[in-house]
Length: 153
Image (cartoon, rainbow, N blue to C red):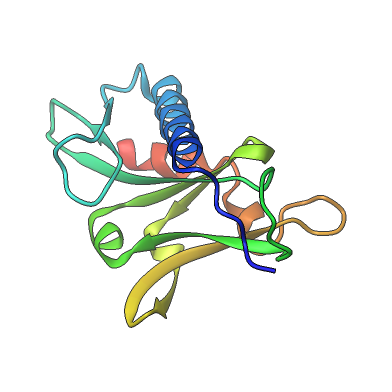
């Protein structure tokens, strides 16, 4: 059985919820740091930009949201993935697993590389173990906000 896709409007809503919640999480953690959090409107290949106006430094983030509440897939796992263009232009992937309300902060160097239809893609595999804990490498990246905060100095 293949995976049934969500209607586009619901898929877009989940994407927006993920991006906006990541922006809020970053704001809460950086509000007194001298850095500002922006939804990206002009940089290529990322969704969110952290900017230090005093130094001009930027941290670029790609946000990906996934859910397993509504799916016909029988697979036990799935991927959070970025394209080659996104990979070239980001510092971090923040993966938001909607139904687990969990954030995974992954430095781009920790993403795995593969190809799909002749194109490079970079990914982190997601899944739950039988005991309900996060499988694969996810546990290493859960709530790893410190990885970004360490780059602010």
